[in-house]
Amino acid sequence: MIRWLLAVLGYTFYRFPGAILGFIIGSLLDNVMGGKRKSGGGFQQVFQQQRSENVSPADFELNLLSLASLVIKADGVVNQKELDYVRQYFVQAYGKERANATFKVFNEVIKSREINSAKICALLRSRTRYESRLQILHFLFSIANADGHVTQAEVVEINTIARYLAIQLQDFESIKAMFFKNPDSAYKILEIDRTATDAEVKKAYRTMAKKYHPDKLQHMDEAYQKGAEEKFRMVQQAYEQLQKERGF
Picture (cartoon, rainbow, N blue to C red):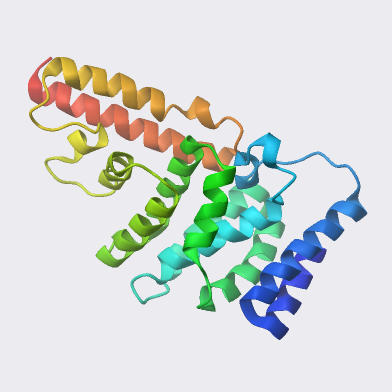
């Protein structure tokens, strides 16, 4: 695709800003040359339709990869398992050919020190639904956990991104608890305290099941929906654990 070629050329001459500019210009050229074509799945579909004319799908994709790179670099080590997780996602979502093309730019993004997460998140915040941003958060934690361990540095980085995305603290802690096993994990996932009554536990489960239900992300690609299903399953497991512990 033209956008990948221009992105690589842009990075060669103007580093990361050139890659972004080349990617966007190339996307516009791809659209013009390709004419009207059916839009596929992917992260780009989380953009609200009424604002889609202001931000290109390619721009969204590159911004998401930029956030992923910040998480991967957070602990000072570029872990191959985390890179493989991102690659595998794009293979599942877009096919091997497009995934390989994406990583030609992503490998350069990883090396860049010019990524401004505040600006990227401001853009995403204004263009995405809240439930989609929750799934972005889950995706970033999944990247960090790809090597079997989420480091404190990665938690700090994801927390910063979550704040920029205007994600509520309780929701951040709920998703974080899905990746850390401790006696309070089930309570945190359901966003309640240990002092909650059985009736409050049941109500919290209904609330969280509704919030995280995969049907809310039917507008996104299959790989992303699988992440939503995993999140929903963790809510169910947390509730079943408390049911067993409390005997109701």
